[in-house]
Structures are given as C-alpha cells and as structure tokens.
View 1 (cartoon, rainbow, N blue to C red):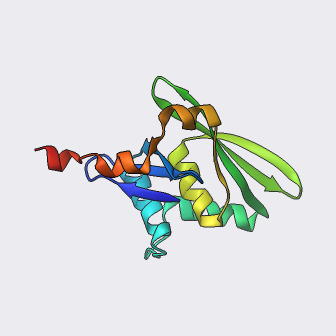
View 2 (view 1 turned 60 degrees about the horizontal axis):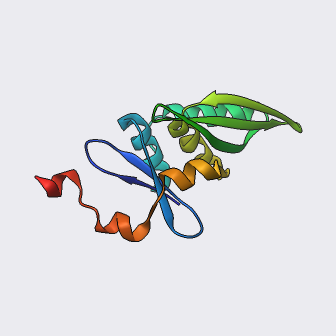
Length: 136
C-alpha cells in the first residue's frame, strides 16, 4: 500500500503485510504523479512517468519490479527491473520514480528487509505522531 502524506514535504508510506510503515520523502512532482495514479486520475497531457511507461509498452517492455536496495547518507536507492522478451534489464533510479512507474503497471515494489526493519514504524506509532502543522 502506498500513501502520500504531508503538505510541505511529501512522503510515500510503504506498508508491509504486518502493517509497519516506512516513509520515503519525495519531491512535489513525484508526489503529484504518484497521487494521480493512486486516485486513478488522468491528466489532460501525459506526465513524465506516463510517457515513460507508454514508451516501454510500445517497445514491448514491461516493468518486472522495483527494488529499494540501498540507503546511503539517508538517501534511498532503487533498481528498476524491466522485462523485454524474456530478458531482464536493470536500471539505477530514484525510488520515487520507480514507485510512480511501478504503480502504473501494477508491478511489485520490493524493499531490502534490513532497510525496512531499520526505517519502519508501526501504524499505531504513526497515527499517534503529530504533523508539523499540529506542532505550531
């Protein structure tokens, strides 16, 4: 499950089967792109992630999965895995871009277990936390 939270600093909340959440802070453009696909909204013109997915589809390529596999200096890194005619191709990419594209093709979003364990919080803890707006 992926949700967009926050006003000034958007984040994607990734959730595992047990209900633990891991936030990844993203840019406004990526938040808009992810939010539009989650709400099943179609923009008047294709957004960048729509364009990329459309190009992949026309080239006979599909998103196999994305894998958030590293965190260095508080920055997450991901790999985009594509399948074309049975051949797998991987690209280094930002997690937010990977998530935006994976959602458009219902591709699996995978996270390294250790990274998720280190950075996740329980849903109850998240619900008890205050937003920046509530602290003012």
